[in-house]
Figure 1 (tube, rainbow, N blue to C red):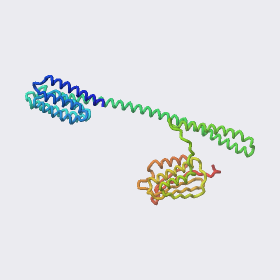
Figure 2 (figure 1 turned 120 degrees about the vertical axis):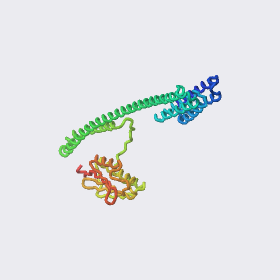
Figure 3 (figure 1 turned 30 degrees about the vertical axis):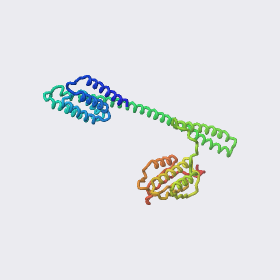
Figure 4 (figure 1 turned 45 degrees about the vertical axis):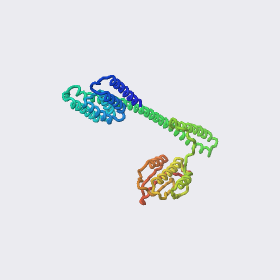
Amino acid sequence: MRARRANWAAAIAAGLLAAGGALSGMGRDRIPLGADLASTAGMTLAIGLSPFAPLPVLVVVTVAAVVYEAIGWGTPVLIFAMAAALYHLTLRHSRRVSWTAALICGVCWWAATAFRAPELLWTLPSLSSFAWSGLAVAYGESVRNRRAYIAEVEDRARRAEQSREDEVHRRVAEERLRIARELHDVVAHHMAVINVQAGAAVFALARQPAAAEPPLNHIRRASGVVLKELAAIVGLLRQPGDAEAPHQPQPGLDRLPELLDEFTAAGAAIEFAQVGDARPLPAAGNLAAYRITQEALTNARKHGDGGPIRVRFTYERDRLQVEIANGAGPSRTEKSGYGLIGMRERAAAAGGSVDAARTDKDDFLVRAVLPAPWQHEE
């Protein structure tokens, strides 16, 4: 907006100067006052409107300049208007378009001069039309190149700044991960000590109860250290600015009926079956079984054919097998989406595995196998 206001201010100033020259009688012997004032008004409008529509303005000004020149009313104000239109045309269009337009304008003006006075065909005043057109385009090219250079420099500076910020964040994340790994080693060491001391305490309680006190005190101190180290690990891995989330217990298979009820209330037909007696799972396996079931039900609801979803929990001697099957939709494949990747990662973290594939009945089956040892085997 500032550039457009400046352009209109320059157009009005040039128009006032040209009108003053026309009223003072300059060039009155070769052009009538009315025609001179009309060309002045046309120049003002042409300069002011050139940034918005340079090509139509150039066509109108060129036609007016050719008519004036052919009649014998040659006036420099139309030359300025033509140069302004060529300048703004160069800023908005390609080099081929701008130079072609400059050549056409120069030829038309030169032809109009030759039509009025053939003896001036090869004189400098007649050939100056090419010079004015070329100068306008050349100046426009230089301005456009300068603007493009400044924009490129600013873009490079912005990208360099972003790259520096990304590098800083990456290094901070790597350093935090390294520290977290070191703290994890400390936690693992203390947990190993707790395990050894707990075994010693169990042995002492059966034979010499008084000797169990030192191992139990050591377990108490080591567990306190472990809790502090775990808090430090969580604080390191939390990103700066993360809000402190309210503490909620991790979901497990005890909330499985509630999960199935939620999907049933949403309109899904679920057929649940359980084989074997349910028993507590390790914490990681318990969470993984719940999340895998939740993700599989979500995928079946989203990509299935709308038929019933069959959920089957099979408790075997040392493992739990979870199967979720549904009618596969036309676009469902065993490698599609990120949900299966997340399920496989969760199962692997708990020491299990996840497979997904179409069955012979053209159903889509997700099978998760998770460790589920008996309590005395833990």
